[in-house]
Image (cartoon, rainbow, N blue to C red; front, side, top):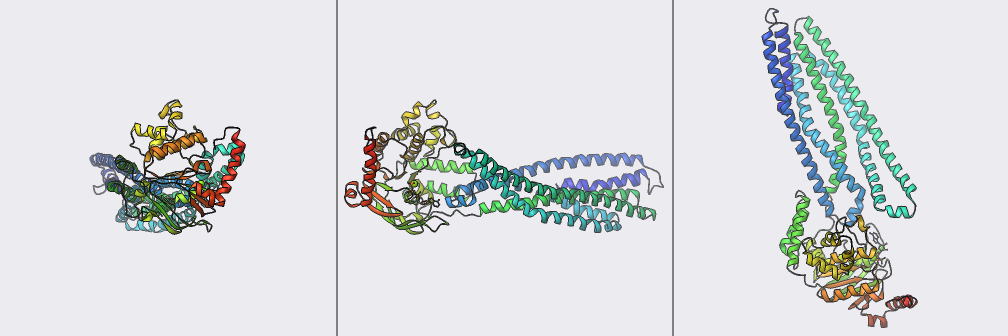
Length: 604
Ligand SMILES: Nc1ncnc2c1ncn2[C@@H]1O[C@H](COP(=O)(O)OP(=O)(O)OP(=O)(O)O)[C@@H](O)[C@H]1O
Ligand SMILES: [Mg+2]
């Protein structure tokens, strides 16, 4: 870049030589020197070609640097987001995270590229050009004294006016992305409730707001260039005027005035480009602060150092991936995945004990206590069921075990160690939650199951699917295990989705298995077969099963009855039938349903 600009700065000097010495023959009694003109001309052409080559080279380098910079920032942000707690992800909103990681990164990438190239160029043109101009004749400085403040004022005015608009612009883009995301993923609901018109209007409003802001920005920017052009042309006229006075009194040559015109054009063009950079800068600063918001957000939930019986290398691989944002995201995933397979080859983890001690919980930002004074214990290898009315806090309770959220009071012990002391990866490697809502990805059925353990063998995958009662229906799919699953699992029935999610959870082979109402969409016969498989194939695993139906829970070793966030009773089915009013009530209400259903083959 420096070489490129130096060539541009040197060139007017050669022009001056050609005009004054070669053409006008100054210093040679007015006789023009054609040989000087051609030789200087050839040197000038060669120099310009060399300058062009430097220009191309610096352009390529700036491009590589800019792209890599954007790439790194994007990866670092994505890495951060992957380690956010649910609360943190919700706080940013999905749409905003998407805007930030795409549009905002593009903005600062643009800024970076323009800045490294433009800033050096402009500063060199500005400083070098000014020095060169003044060295021609100091009186040209008068023109600069008037032109500079005018241009600065122009730049500052635009900068101050547009800056707040840029941050508004990004926010409008967030809103738009939120609406798009919500409606595209929720299109079925929108259609089912015939809300297309309303949603279109909502989109239109957000879009209008975006366009309106964009328009105001462009309107302001459209003032900048013409104003600068006027100043530039006035400056050229002023240089010619000052120059003609100097030529008249014999203190300057015409070639010198020509060179001065070229320099002032270079200087002011440099300043104009600088103004464009300022505009990108002002937008880039907004984007940069939005990105640092992500990068500076430390994961709210971080683990301790205790890794229990997890392979130490495994947990280190994960920790590294969590800590170093500069490491490529995909390599991280691979290393964590490879590491995971190592631990799985060592066989399923041993069944841990779990113990809640006076646990209270409120969701962040809410004062409603969802769980109060929860204390209970699950022995190693035990199967414990949790039953309770909808909204009583069952999902919330199990979500505390893998630390999706942390208790507001009290503590949870896994094998006698506070889960907060566990390395987060080691903890989550030992605890598998089959979530209430089965999330499937846009991939084949096999890949969706293998998420539980990406390096599982075909045999292991099939074994997990058989236990989850999924193998039979998967084989009936057009391409068996290779059948692609549509986004969100929309190509499968609710029960099929659940069984793929269960297969995935079983494949992970961790010591503690938590099913959050994972069999709600299965008929009782299929559910019974699944429970049988769990009893035989996964007997060395501690299990916590949330269920709504007594029929699903009555064979559990113990049943925890949750009532409005409190433990109402905790015992086996036979005892609960004698001691717990609430349990009896649930039983009675379901028995009634079963009686009326009996004629239709109800299985209770
Ligand atoms: N992310 C959240 N933020 C705030 N409140 C929440 C959140 N998730 C759940 N709640 C509230 O916590 C309470 C318990 O919800 P939870 O999902 O644990 O119930 P549940 O027993 O699993 O119900 P269900 O049987 O319907 O699945 C509810 O009152 C719910 O409104
Ligand atoms: Mg729930």
